[in-house]
Every structure is written in structure tokens, then in C-alpha cells.
Amino acid sequence: MTNNGSDELRVGQALGPYDIDALATEISELENSHLDLGSVLVPVVEGGQVTVEMSETHQPQNVYLVTPIGRISVSAFAAPKSPGMWREVVRELAESLRDGGASTSIEDGHWGREVVAEVEGGTHRFIGVDGPRWLVRCVGSGPSESAEDLARLSRAVLAETVVRRGSEPHPPREPLPIVLPPVLADQVAAAQQQIFAEEEAGAPAEAPTQEVPAADDPEGVAGGALDQVAHATVYGENSYTEAPAEGGPGEHDPSVTADPDPEDDAPLPPSSGSAMQRFFRRR
Image (tube, rainbow, N blue to C red; front, side, top):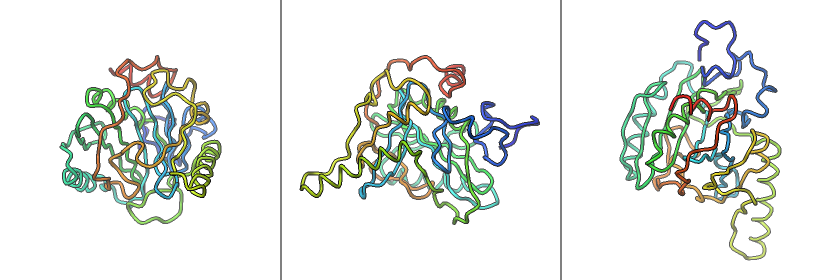
């Protein structure tokens, strides 16, 4: 993204998603405001939680920001040098979601076209932005009654997301690598060990959940990214069902369903500079 004439492009100006090479902000400054997943640095939401979903092979598959009004995921993909890949993806994604049984529509958002998929009791919104040799996709999923609020919050998160493309060659549409923070990686490794131990004992393998507030707990996790990562939850596959799969930016799971029911109560008061704060300002 451009800095609209500003001398320095810094996180906090809501001018993202940012390319890391164009930023004046030092990555160390984002340690407690952003979840560093390698290819993307995503701002956490005050009062939210970080959750990791495991695949059938017990590998990390998706990382979510769970908020009182729904959950948000952000992923980056390789793209050609010429922009316009998201426009192609929008058409394919809408058609694929309709084939999967969802009611879909195209809406105009801050960065252009957004795909909205309606399922029984739930709404999934796909927001994409083309960058220099990357495409970043944000998906907000939650109860239909919170859809508009979650759309604004998803855009606020995306506006402060940082993309780290790297110099490695990747075919267009290939997901850019996700690297879990060490604390989160340790928790996933512990979950994997427990699963493998249960499998060896002949017990049904289930990814453990940690003793933290549930997704529908209005108290969430206090603090910034460091606290939320320290209290992250690891789930087994399909504990949450999410429209996009771990393939390209337009792929999805045909079994699109609504989220578990987050409470309809208002989210906790925002912390200074958080995505939630910008969300409340724009309500």
C-alpha cells in the first residue's frame, strides 16, 4: 500500500495492509500488538483469543483471532508482479461457495470487492487485497446478527496487517509459509504429543484444549499479543469449520457452517491503538 504522501509509512496509520519492506516501523515495536506468523503479522484484538486448528495429520492448519462477535483469520499468498489476482479469485470463490450450498453476494468494501457467504445462522466475509507479489486475504466468520460489526472489525484488522513476502520464489496462489511463534509452537507440539500418545494407547485422538476462557466467554484474554499467545487454545480438525481451506486464496471447504455461538454482549472496552479501538470509533 502507499503512504498517501506521508514521509514515513508506519503501523498505526490504518493504511495497510503493509508490505514489510515499505515500513518505517521496526518489527520489535510490534511484539505485543501483532501476532507474528512469519508471512503475516496480524494485530490482535483486545478481549479476544488466539486459537490454532489442527489438521487430520495433526499439523497446524489455521490460526484464528476469536473475538466476542466472531473470528478472523488472515493469510497471505504469492501473486504475480501485475496486480489483479483478487478480482479473478472473487469470481471463482463466489461460484465455489454457491456450489457448496452457501448463498453468496459481492459487496464493495474499502479495498474493492468482498465476497459474502450466508449459511444457516452464520456469515463468512472474504476480503482480499493485492500487494507487491502477494495477495492477502482476511476472512471474518460469525453469527449473522453480528455480520456488519464483524465486517468493520475485519477491515480494521486488515488495515494494520503486515505482509512479509520474502524473496523465495512461489507459484501464484501458493500460500506463503506460516511460522508459529515459539510459545505457540511449543503448545502445538505438546498437543501433538498428547494426540500421538492417545493413538498409541488406542484411545480416540482428540486435540486437547487448554484451561483458558472458551470462545464464547465475554471475558476473553486480557492483554496484548504476548498474553494471548501464552493462553492460546489448540483445537482438533473441524472444531471450527471455516470456509477457506489451506489451499489457494479461493479454495474452500464445501461444508461451510456457522460458528459456535459467540455471546451477543458488547465486546470489552478497547485498548489504546488496538484494532478494536478503531472498530469502536467507526461504529
